[in-house]
Length: 68
Image 1 (cartoon, rainbow, N blue to C red):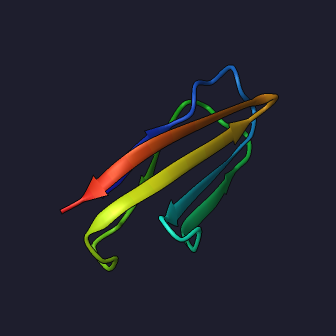
Image 2: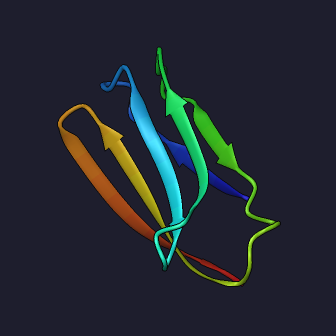
């Protein structure tokens, strides 16, 4: 399980989780954001490195996550 919190200065955001091949394993559109926790259950994915991409407003952030 991973938690993603989008700062409430952004009213909307797109969260995408991809494996190293670029295959999307999780995705969520956040609207009417209030800075709440967005949870993703990665229990069904293989061990390895994943990229969490967050697009909010004009900003984009990428974070690597290791599933063990």
